[in-house]
Structures are given as structure tokens and as C-alpha cells.
Image (cartoon, rainbow, N blue to C red):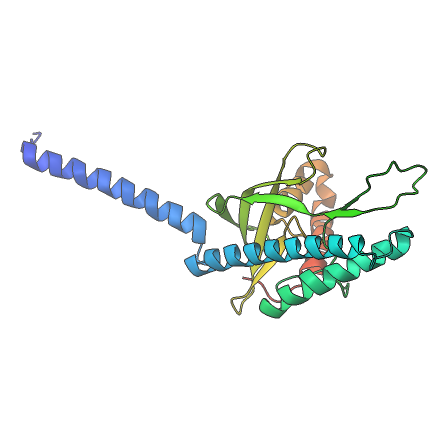
Length: 248
């Protein structure tokens, strides 16, 4: 025999179901975002690190152009020019950034981390003979709300990803704005490390891409070779990860 719930009880029950679904959705969103690794403090620090790096890159552009203008940097020799600009990038960007955020930038076994810039010349260049009289850095718009956390199924590390990064050089003659990605990984001692950033040539890690490549081996090589191919790929990834401290 069917029993009928009183209307008040029925509304209450429906309310509990809706509230339960809402809470479940919120919990699922929170879990997918933090995933037990990245916290609200990490999101804040990632934003602060990015803004500080942006400030240092602007300082680099300003100082480089002043040195070019007053003749301190030799623009008559491309090799000398390139060396001077790269050294200035280390001095004005990398050194102060690492002083504030030690071990937050990785670049394999290299001792220096190149910065991304573009040299331009007001005079036409012929046969590669250019006299550069200006340096530009990327103009980047960050959407810190567009983020997600990806956890690798195969390597069990997590990555904080900002997928809505819009960038272009300041010169209006350059190409239209391009989309990019910025990401971080987190060490077991709680430090954040850039794993991809538009301004710098750092050791790049993309765990989602790594997992897809690992999984694709099974469908594109003979069954008898899958295990060996996956093991070889795993070693290749682990060689890259060896440049980093232990990650969460």
C-alpha cells in the first residue's frame, strides 16, 4: 500500500534533495579546484608571483631601452647586443624574482633562465644586418579566476593551471592577441614553482598532455610493444621531473 507524505513534508524533502545536490556540486567544484593540494593561500601566492614577475619584466624593458638610447648597450654588433640584453634580463628580472621566491623557477641543468623579449629596429633590416634600437616585452592580461587543478593519473602529481592568458607585444604592428597558459606545480614542502609562464623559458611540464601521450601509446603501437614503450616514456618524463624538487 502506497503512503502519501503530507505536503509540508514533501516540500521539506524536496528542499533537502535540492540543498543536498547544491552542496554536492559545491563540494565537487571545491574538490576539483583544490584537489587536496592547492589551497586558497596558493591561489593568492600564484597571483602575487605573477604580478611581481610582470613588474620586473616592465622594469627590464624600461631599463633596456634607456641603456640603448644613451649608448650604454652596443647596438652596432648583434652578438654584443644580444649578450648585453640577456645579462640585463638576469639582473633585472631573474635575480630579484628568485631572491623573493627562491627555487620557484626551473630550467633543467642551465645556470640561467632566458627572458622572453623582442628586439625591433626603426630602420629596414637587410640580409640579417639589423641595428636594434628598442626592446619590447609581452603585454599580458591575466584572468586569475579561470583556473583549474589537474592531477595526473599516471604520475600522481597535481598542477594548477590558468588557461585564460592573453598576450601580445606592445607594438601595434605585431600580430593579434594570442592565448596562452600559465601553470604551477607544488613541492612537498609547500613551495610553488612555475611549470609554464609566457615571460620565461622554464622547464615546461603539462601533466594532462603527458597522460594523454602515455595513454595513446596503447592505441598506436603493437600490443607486444605497449609495455616497453610506456616504460620508456615514463623514464623520459621522470628525467624531466628529476630537475624539480619532490612534487605533490
